[in-house]
Length: 439
Image (cartoon, rainbow, N blue to C red; front, top):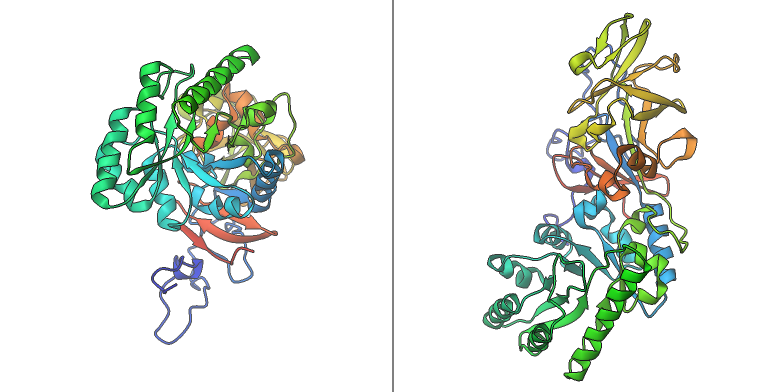
């Protein structure tokens, strides 16, 4: 790999360029602005500290991602493929930061929702096997050919356009077909006319039909079984027409664990990759991989009767010491947790007070008198050490776990840890930068 093609090292960025012929030491400039704040305690590598440019960041444990993917692989067995769903920037974890770990630990493909997500992955590694589960407008079909991306198709017209483009390109376009068994979001209808169209798509010269799938509504056992039976009837009807499609899939994370009979040829593993449990009947040993952290940047004393934040929705009933934390709803934290949210400071759950701001929020230090500037604060933990897990945050917010993590914006840097060491970082300003080689 040439120098221009290699992933940037963290030593290639965030530093002033070194003089010609002299390697950069990666050290910070001697002059530091005078400030009464405690310095940001940046994570360390065995090379040098690196600049996140923020006190607030999201830490991803790659060992836990690997553990979860291995658990999914073992659950599926050798006959069932595992598609790792990394849409929505891998549920907020950073798709580029975890893709290699997933594929090295049992994932057969990476599943996304949009073309932009697929292209981002393919630009990192052209050999990544990527399936777009959503639809792509025909004007963007050339990207599918250029990057060799598997595309979901759910109309005959789409297939015809893609086949014609592939013919002009002298290549075959790779697709999965979507059928609607009751969810009524995407897919060919389960009618005889639609079955004839699917058969015609499968016979197109420049399309490689590698899979066919549908999605469960997951209302209850009866409706799940009704959808599954309809899907198997579609399979039988196509086989009668002489059509054989190699990969049939209906199960997402929940169905993959709770309904082994629905695993078919592949499951689409989403939340369980990240250690988020939505299943109820089955069991799977998975571990939450994400921790959301920040530090205290300001402490002030508020007198009894004084208000805090917009509209003074919180007022001190006694002289109170409060701290400001540099995160807010622009980082993806739910604004609806005004007066309900907590963070963990020195192992104690500490209430968020006042209205959560776009970039900051305030906490009451009454029961944490030992708190000082620079102290680490856990926004989302895994439930250990009195932290709030993503499950608990979702319950407080009145939503589901996927919503909590997928709303995390790209502004907080992502730090990737493996074997207790930081191996990669992604800042909000640019892409993924390797620090140490993955093992």
